[in-house]
Amino acid sequence: MNDEATRYQDEVHTPTEVANPEAYPPRLVKSYPGAPRHPLPWPPEKSGHRLGRLLADLGGITRSQWLTPLDMLPFTDSFEAIPDDDPLQWLVTRRPTPSGGARYSAEWYVIAGPDSEVPTGVHYYDPARHDLVRLRAGDYRSWVASRPAATVLVQTSVFWRLAAKYGEMYYRLACLESGIQVAQALAVADGQHATARMCFPDADVTELLGLDPREEGVHALVELLPPVPAAFGGPSLAAFPRAAGAHAAVLAQSRPEAEPLRPVEVALPEAASDAESDTEPDTESDSGPESEAASPPVETEAEAVEAEPVRIRLPHAVPDLRAGTRTRHAAMRGFSGDPMSASALAAILTAYGQRERWDLPANLVEFYCVIADVTGVPSGAYRYLPDEHRLELVSEGDPRQRLREAALAALTQQGARTGNLWLLPVGDAAAAEERFGARWYRVQQAAAGAALHRACLAAAAVDVASRIQNDVLTHLLDGWFGLEGRKRSLLMAQLGTEHPAGPRPEFRLTW
Image (cartoon, rainbow, N blue to C red):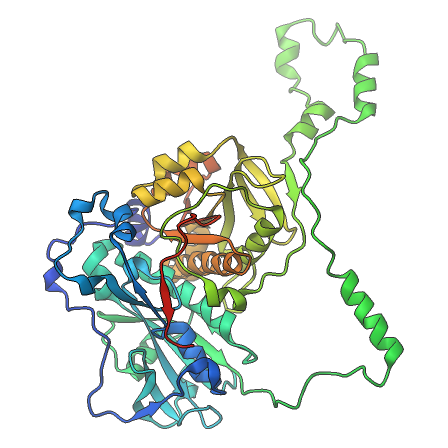
């Protein structure tokens, strides 16, 4: 057992105060003076450069926002605590993926081969200039690739960017963000047959990139296959009109329309009721306490039926994660409290439990959630079963008071009152450590981050607002979920109808 990792998981639930924030460097992008640069086309959406578009969707500076004091109020609880000496502090730039405190610790490197869209070599992606900085010339794919990939992307985390604000909690956030980054990469890698790896020889990759592992850690690899020729459109049925019609009919039948959810009713079989009413008590077997001690309690058929967990079948849904990347944003002004439809819930949960194209097992985390004011679903805590596309009831009742007690900041408490869905991936530390050894904490947190990001992308595609929250005492909900041993809820995302004030004014820099 890794005692330090176990202590970290059990004790580090909230950000810690940073004793001396000035001891950390300012928030600046990296630079390699004098190194050769390869410019990428701008704007990325209007170019045919797939790798440049992918890098912009991962770590590019793509949005600009002008904040108001109202945006900062949920974090300060009073207007007096908001500094106003510099009006330019309200002009901020954003990237496509969420990051703790908008610190953006994630970096991307490119290991390109001869078949890549950029010169062969090892490159650093400069988000401020949207170009590649060449660190090494030559083909180094054999150092990192597990298959014949044209390009390998390497995701790292600059630790001090998070540590300057969140103290000891920085490592947890870095691991969560690595999962978010990988989920984003797999969602936006159109036609590039991308797969990810979270387990690889860290020391070799760190040496290849020339990094100091005490300052910047390598967390994930994304391998891209060579592009498929544009003329190849798959098998054609144009010469067989009858087969084409049958094919279309099969597709239509395999995508049924969403059906409304109905409450689950546990009915007592008539045969069991009749048998109990016609059976006379056995006076000889009930004659004394010795008989009671010798005979174990018999579970009736009615008790067996009642003991079965209540499960709710969800409507069929096909979430469009790529569409969600265009509109995803954090719900900074909370939610309105309007009910959520069953079809929206199904789309979000489908993405939440979707199996990722990476080297981690599907059961590394379990998909718990809390529901309130969703059409056809009783309020309470549930476990989502991806293979069955069903919800399994864990605890009944209105969850809002429990969620408010676990929330720390005013915005999180507001979401506890007005949200409809709270996602909390759960990890079993004992099972993960047995399989992954000392790497267990990193990969389990990454799996949790990826699950929540997929759900937020699916939510954005169906006009549901979301926000991933770190200022939540998730361990206070573990007892309500009935978690035992070393099982813990790892993180929370709140989802619901966006507040009428809407998102902050934003200008897209890439369109």
